[in-house]
Length: 66
Image (cartoon, rainbow, N blue to C red; front, top):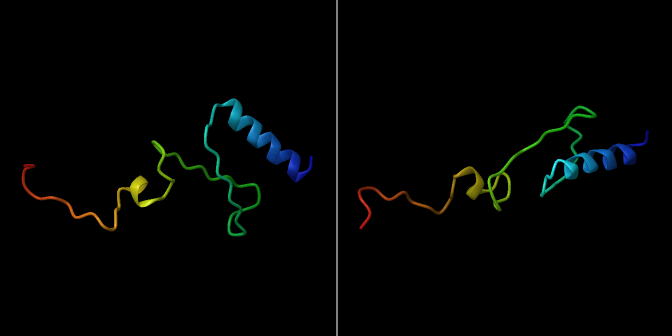
């Protein structure tokens, strides 16, 4: 089976499993055929400051809310 056929099979499997958002990246640093998946809980991009909770411009409020 060709690489393109393998890719199509992988995408078909993901969509059959009702995965709604798919982002594919290639890497020469991963072993050939290796797959890494990441899950997120909403519309934030995987790994973004919002998804990781590490906002660069947010100062945590101390004390009770007003």
